[in-house]
Image 1 (cartoon, rainbow, N blue to C red):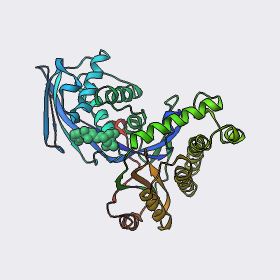
Image 2 (image 1 turned 120 degrees about the vertical axis):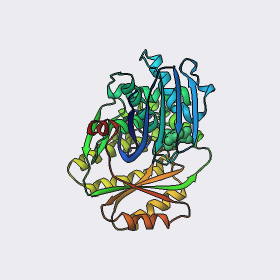
Image 3 (image 1 turned 90 degrees about the horizontal axis):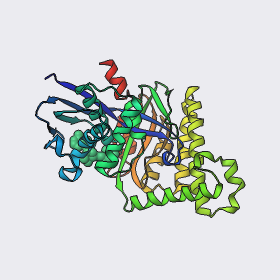
Image 4 (image 1 turned 45 degrees about the vertical axis):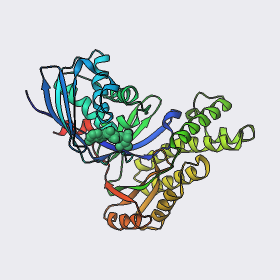
Length: 361
Ligand code: ADP
Ligand code: MG
């Protein structure tokens, strides 16, 4: 059997916070590290997966796939196999070695990178032709059904479809994807605060329902359909909290559009200002920041060479993302890591997504 190698990177959200489930806009990048699968098809209808990072092996019969029968880490891969089967995409048994240079569970979506690498492996091993969006949906559905996490489609799309030196603009209603040139002179630094505050899931659900309440009160299907102007004219009809939640989302959508324009004009300074504005809105309106993330953004503001910084991802702990002038990375990492005891930094650039990587090799 011929050996096959596939790769899919992790991703980071550059601008556009909690906009996905409001059918809004996001700018993301693929990072320059990810998950690699190497292996081949088998003829005995068995699947063998080995993860080098975890030092664990999972062996299961293709015809006995069920989430509750397999260990949690293998569900990201086996969930994809399950989706192929549910969609009548014919697969056989196989064996793979999983290796990764992404930190797991650190908000860079090692999960989507593992799922995407699996989609690519199966399509190559069993000669199945898929469209990019179809690939992303198979990966997303695997995470919904087998892992039990109702993730959006962003992670899978940005890990698959990004291009190096470009930000990936995603319209979370149509899933239209555009590549916006990112000035080649910038690096991205992800600063993981090392803190995860309790109640994240509860807070997340509460934010989602606040957004739904706001949309209903404004008479629009989703906050994507509201503007800041419309919102301000209706301020007195909304409870203060609901108003501020909506202000954040509507503002984020406007900032993503303005940010894309700024990047198209090569104006990284303006883009950085929008990142800071996003963080301020998280603090004041969406209340999904915390002291540690605020401190990291404060440090970024004071450090030469940083264009902009903001919390990235859900919030309530996790990481900040910093847009940095190339050549200044070391000083910035030093400043960020000395802000708090448990900060770890990852320096990356806007990298190729899995499809662009596959084309080049
Ligand atoms: P994130 O996507 O932010 O990295 P998640 O909790 O969504 O965090 O996904 C991380 C999980 O994905 C890990 O706990 C593990 O179960 C699985 N995973 C990711 N990469 C690997 C790998 N290389 N080997 C085994 N499991 C992995
Ligand atoms: Mg994940």
